[in-house]
Image 1 (cartoon, one colour):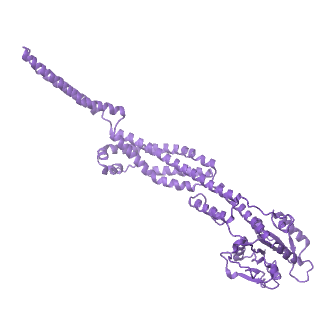
Image 2 (cartoon, rainbow, N blue to C red; image 1 turned 120 degrees about the horizontal axis):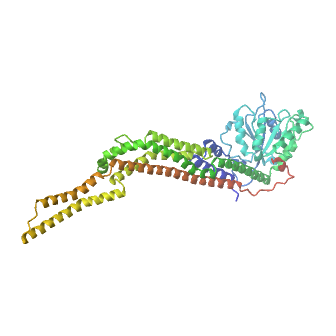
Image 3 (cartoon, rainbow, N blue to C red; image 1 turned 135 degrees about the vertical axis):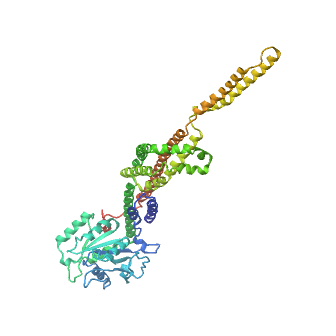
Length: 538
């Protein structure tokens, strides 16, 4: 399916806006793609059918463009230079029935002159005399560039002295594929055959296999003058079929140029293989940076663990005091040193990604949000782990043994008391039934000792084996730090995953536009023997 060029331009501009906003392309690339010109000769008219052929005289200062147009009109309609041979205005010469509705934007209307005629033979041609392209006045060059997208056929006018004009020649090479070209070697009364042949060779190098060159002169009495042939050739081209052929060719040339620009932009987005290397690149960087951070956190963690241990009751029993406990000692783990080390890690990662050809602006944009979250992540994870460690000091085996000792602290004295009570009851009963003496002082002392031992032993063990709150806090802070570093690593990897997904989406949308540009229109065939075939650059 072939796509209209103007639609492709609008699609390109929409993609450019969002890609630029997301940082995938820089301002220069965005400006280049946004400045793609959607204007064509057809945009000058409001019509549903055929339109005139638009022909323009273009050339350097003093080559006689305005004189040629005046000769065509049979009167002075274009201002030929008197004091200084320089055209400063655009002159339009067309049939009175032709209405031009849309003049190019950003042009000074005071410098556009319109002349009408009643010649029916020239009804289907609009002649334009453009300012001198090589003028020192920038407004002249601006007018020429603004009008070029609206031209079908450019008549490149030179003189024997100025046929090697560098500025106009660069314009010819830049615009060659968009227009049909005719060449006029004006002022031929002062020309030489060698100049004609040299000019022809130059055109051949530019891509014209058999350029059509007319030798003209505005001086009277010149025997060799091909101005009539020039006018006849233009008249033969002013048909609906030729205009359609020129429109198709110009449209395809613009599509090809747009496609080339988009392909060049695609290279700036980076390759899929480069993005695939980002996770490994970051993990290698983070492994080194995390090791440095852990080494640097050793002393602050010890100080903070001691502080947590001293204020464990406030931390666990008074939530409103938790913030003071965490920050009151001014020993926050994530200090300026840690932030600087983390920033260094991200910056080095971004530099390495840039060396792989990855656009770093979207990467920086998403990583900047993570930079702001990191202090909160470290604080939240370290505080949570410290709370959990203080709430459950020691390891599982240790805590299980202490629970058993607490049970023994209750059960063993009770068992001893029960046994002593049983012995007292049995002794009393036996002493009443027999002559055996009742329990004495020794039994009382031993029973008391037994009860004391069964209580003191678990109590002593619990006292001596009570977990250190400082060690528990230290273990919790280390665990929280490791959790935080793991979350930071995961956060960066998630950013990389998002960037890779966005890259795939950007490339997919860009490839879609490129594919649309490559969908060729059904071309109207051009007869190789026709003058038009010789007017098109290879």
